Image 1: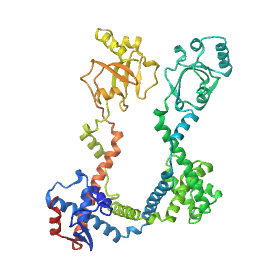
Image 2: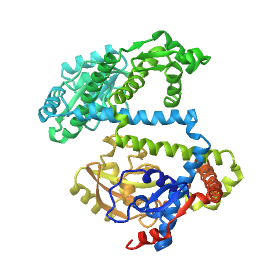
Image 3: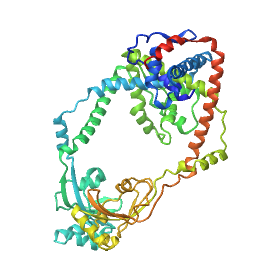
Length: 554
């Protein structure tokens, strides 16, 4: 029996699905050590079973195979309890974590998420008061010092041309373009100093010197426009919802702190740092409470273990950072889980049933681990041999695209460029004279040349990759009709054929090893399951009569 069959059985059999319309749904198909498996249990299991896991047999034989999966599930759980795996401290702790997480989610939904409302008036007020939607098309002059920048402003006030000054005095790479940045920018794409120094300006106005990491900028607003409210409505609603959710959560958590008489032991923050970075914790330190409240506490050792599990690669470096993490999620989650129990959510029927499923899944997983862990070794040579045997499977990286484009502003311009190219003019020369690509924002994974040459790296999406596909040889040298690209129009040509590329062995070595190991572990587990069936054969009874009646009409 595949482990995937078993997981479906665990998730479905104890669930609360819709009632069956079949009169025989309550009849017992089988018993395992006195526990009945009914027609309704099998019906629910088969409803949830994916097509690829369904038995290839037909009629009663197919239903019998599915019933065997449910029997196997009961046998495995029975064996796990015989071994007292349900008493393992680690398993109990893991179940407690899973349940607490669910309780936190349920209480948060009821007390925070479901209480949020956003009105149309709030959306429009946010749009106006936060000055959302504004975009500017800037030009800039980069100077080495504030003194130089103020000299630029003095010359501008005296009537000098901004673009000429940029060509003569700017230290930026775009000086030869008069400092024109070539596109509209919204506030999200600007650092705070540039945002605060420019977005209040009107068209034609020039900023004061703005300090940046490159020097001092003087910025002129060439154009300014505002995206209409209706276009931003969804984004504003999302931002406002997040803001209100955060505020309501803070208020609710503060109320729980007061209700449960919260007490901090700030002097023990250094013990947390010892546990994370230094000498570790002794037993007394680990058991000492970092925070206490009516009905519970967060112990130093438990908090350290949570941080090590969750904050991999980003452990808080000092006491301030530790306290921030404590306040951000550890303490709120503990208080929410406690309050959920105070309100009796843990006794709600659906959560009780859900907890039972999770417990059974943990038991079965632990038994499987006990039976297969450490029993399968996959040598490097076998991994390499698998890779070479199925080499075509690993040709899955899209090829690198080499092409030429001429990008212009309108469809009519593109049609004119296409006509000239088909009349014999070189696409590269047309790109140098007419393409607007050089004035546009960079695109990740794309390299553009003034001659119109474009290289698109393997793993980057593009309208051109959508057009040509992940490999292509048939379109080499063919001039393509105008296509809309980045709100402009492109005439383009594929210059070189390209094929799917091979994923490097180093990149897939680990997943191949895992795949081979899991396959062998599956064989071991199936052998264990066969032995369990033999040992427990006298504990299993199947009613062939009820099974035959069940199969009729299905």
